[in-house]
Structure formats: C-alpha cells, structure tokens
Image (tube, rainbow, N blue to C red; front, side, top):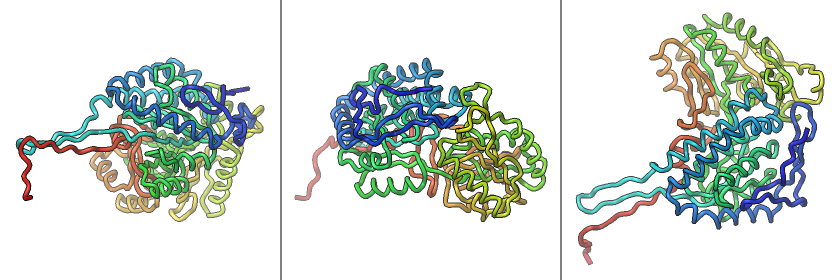
Length: 487
C-alpha cells in the first residue's frame, strides 16, 4: 500500500525536493507500515517558499476580490469532484475511518474555499461622515502568512487557513504536521488547476524546527497554528516577540452538560460524537460529560449499549466506524491515561483495552473507553488525552455544574443538552468557552467562528472573523475644506 507523492514540497507552482532534509516516514496507523517517505525542509527550501510567496502576493492582492474568489470557488468544485480520492489519502495518512473522511475532511475544506470565495467580495471597510469631511477604512492583506496544521484534520486545516488568507489577498506557506503531510500537497495541485498563480500557496514539510524557521522569518507577517497548548505558547511567544500577527487554535478539556430532561438518545449520541468521532482525536471534544443525577444511571446504561456496537477495524472498510490512533506515541499516551484513571479511583466502566484485529496487529487501536465515578480533580478529568476516553461525572444543580465546568485552564468548547431552552441559553452564557452547542455537539460549519477562550487559543477560524484575522485596517481621513491651523 503506497501513497508516495511526486516530491516532499510544493513551491512556486512545482513539486520540489531536497533529500538532505531529515526523512519523514508516513506511517499508515492501521498497520504501522510506511506508505511514503518525505523529507523535512532544509534552510534553502524554506527560503524558496517564502520568497515565492513574497514575489507572488502583490499582484494577487491587486486583483478584485471577486476575481480572487472565483479561483477559490473553482478549487472547491475540484475538491468535491475528487472527494473519494482525497478521502482515501486522508485515511491512509490519519487512520480515520473512510466513512468519516468521505463526509468530513475534503468536504469541509471545499466548504471553506466556497464560503470565503464568495464572502470576500462584500468584506469592506467603513465610511464615517464628519459633515463635509469624511473618513473611510480599507481592509488590506497582511502579506505572507504561515499556516501550521494539525494531524487530526489535515486537509480541513489547510483549507480553513488558506481560504481566508488567499481570499483576502495574502500568500501562504503551509506546513502540515509531520504525521500527516500528504493531503496539503494534493490541495496545492488543485489550487494550481483552479488557476491560482504560482507562489501563492506553498507547502513545506518538516518538524518543529521548520515551523520555527517559518514563524520567525522576517518576511512573514502572520502565523496561524492549530495544535497543542504547549506548542501554541511557544509559537505565540515567538510571534509576539517579533510583532507578528498570530491566531492560535489549541486544545481543550471541554464540558458537555446533560440535564435530567434531555432527550436521552440525542444526549447519548452527542456524547459519543464528542468523545469517539475520529477516535477521540478532536480538539473540541466534550470529554468531561456531566450528567444530572436523575438521568445518570439510565444515560450510562444506554451509552454502554451504543458504545458496544461501535465497529472497530480496517479504516478503508466503509462499514468501520472507528479506526486507530495516529501513531505509537499517541497510542502509548492514551493507554497511560487509562491506567492513570484506574489508579486514581475512577471506575473503568467499559473498554480500555487494545482490540485484537486480524491483519492489523501493528496498528494503533484502542477500544472506546468510558470512565464513571470520575471526580473533578482526577487527571483524566483535567488533562487533554486526545483519544476515545470519556469521563462521566455526576452533578446535582445548575449552579454547581456551571462552576465545575468552568474550573479548567481551557476554554475551547462546551455543550448543553436539555429541553428547557431558557436554561440552555442561560447556561451557555455562563460557560467560559468560545465554540458552544445546544442539543448537539462538534458541528463546525464554516459560516460561524471557531476558537477558544483562556488557554485554548487566540483569534478565530472560519466566518467573516477569519477575514478579520488575515487583514489589517487602514484609516483614511479626507478633508474637503480648508486646513484649520493655528500656525
């Protein structure tokens, strides 16, 4: 099973390689086999990419927004036409079940390109009347932007970052995660086929040192990272020290609150989506599931029944519902947290083992796991695990659960299930989280902003807010009369 691209990097409209760079083995998480080998960017590769972006950006910025948008909309159409092929690449790269990647990965990138391709034409500045004289503001591009992607949604991340950047008239150098380097190269080809001029979307592979080189480059105006909180602190600190624009979409330990009056099937389905989708490797996951006492036992019983029915196995089988974790290190991390949960006194209610799957003995699989009798101070309730490990916690009252839900350094997401809509809105207003849901979980349409409070990030992906973050505001005062001067 091979997925070898033409070369490691895509710069100025061409595939480029430099085999002096450190090898990047691409491992299929279901079997542990190497399906491709790329090379990390050398200093020369980084310079070529940044220079290509710098040279291409001014002419692109001078185009009418509707012309830039037209290219993005064509690219969205190509993404949709090649959805099956791209979904397979994502599954080989991430190990996620093909039934997920077919609907959630290239499709999400296409939605972003389509939305920003249309929205940018009406994203304008303001006019201020001073009774004769007046002022106006202009939205102008930043220049060369760097996008640093995560491994859980590779092509989605590349689309979410590049679409608003390009629509606004910027150029982008995108560095995928070294764990999932393939699909960004496919996106680069699609952009070129759609008519994007060379140099405007460049893909550079590499480890943390390459991300540092890009983020610290003097030509780069803005850095957008999706990743862990520790990585975000480093990148934001670097960008801040150099007065660069930055947006950080980081991790979380999000609360999902289920009240007694919730529809139990919807609540269980929401909790499963919030913990087991993409094998639990979603930054916004609601991994602290607070269930009110009157519903708790029935909820756990039904949750267990439905979790037992999850089909784990070959990610390329359309009937498989859960694939492996991304790599060995993550597999070991998740299993260590399961051990920690048991040692801390939580009840391992279901799962927690490595399944035996014929033909996939080298894969990084783990069963969907449910802990009950979890208390707020346990590490499994405070630290981001990034795997299919759900903590179920009891609560009695609304005020109590809001206080407990907010007792975390994170603030990415939150959810509430209840039939009492005034209560739903009241609780959501009190929760310290940037992306919230009522009676659903983990939907992220491009039309609404996505991002977090507190340690979970700065800035927003998606919606018109993203165009804000990829532009700078210029104020222009226009005098229509004489200059009043005391001199």
